[in-house]
Length: 425
Image 1 (tube, rainbow, N blue to C red):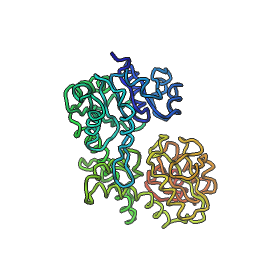
Image 2: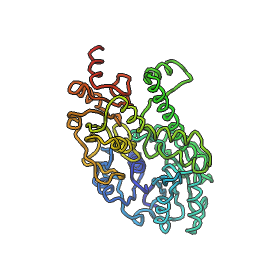
Image 3: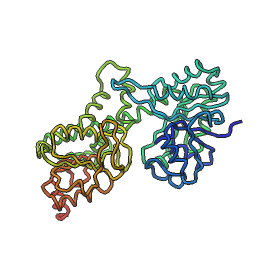
Image 4: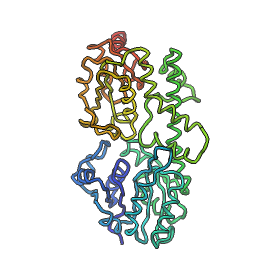
């Protein structure tokens, strides 16, 4: 009846790894994406972004991405929608991407298909989709067409492994829908966990929000330790050591398109301050804290500043919802002589949506020439060696290293301290 087992609607960082993993598992999969550059890269057998494990699979050119849903949606038995639900500026879920996808798919939906929402959504979104389908088509969900929410819970950079190792939540309101989605994801996931729409939606949000709160506590503890002149890394290590009731996280920038916004999908429905809102405030304050605390030790005004890393996560090329642009704006407020951004995972120039012009991406060795202050904004591989070299060439330069890339258990130090620590060890 159908030519394809599955069509992925939106072949970005969530949809493309899923499509490629399904193809590798023997599923006949295809995709639809409005981004012409994305389509060109995938159809040419090249990954459009960094995600380990998929270069050989995509090079086989078995997963083809189309421009129009008319080409493949009517002939696909499962439709997996992977577009997201970001937040508006005022802690309000933005459904526009899902609304546009539904409008583009409506006339192509067929009896016997299964529609699956995959990206993080606010509570009630799957029910919204059910109502939309039944209002705008002649199809009855659970009878003519099936609908589930099957959240992705992979970590960026680990999709190839985690799609086959993590349990898959399948949320539906009828057994036929749950059975259909379970059969598809059972080709990858080692275990299927069946539930309803709202529980599946909350599972994904609770997973992300609990991590967000945990990191906020770590960042607040880092600030408290610095105010008392204590070492946060030693304090954390001692607190966690062989103690079964403590698991303090490392401090750092807590960002990305899931962690930075998902608290809002719950907070949207609460009129009162709570720990979710407080966690957001703490994590968003961390860039300002780094600038403020460094200025108690060094001078930024009229000095050269380097920012190492621009993506939101180590060893990725994803700048979506990164906190580094915010850090750079706080640095710029101090009127430095120059701010040099360097991230070897990104192209030159860096096109960042909040910047009025593309940002120069300096080679790291050039960025550190005659530099006075360095902010380690992302813990990319290789930065330890870079900081050691800085310590040899410019030992008086100050470093703000919330990720402890230098490995000397200090957030703020002079680059020469790294060389001294290495000699003494």
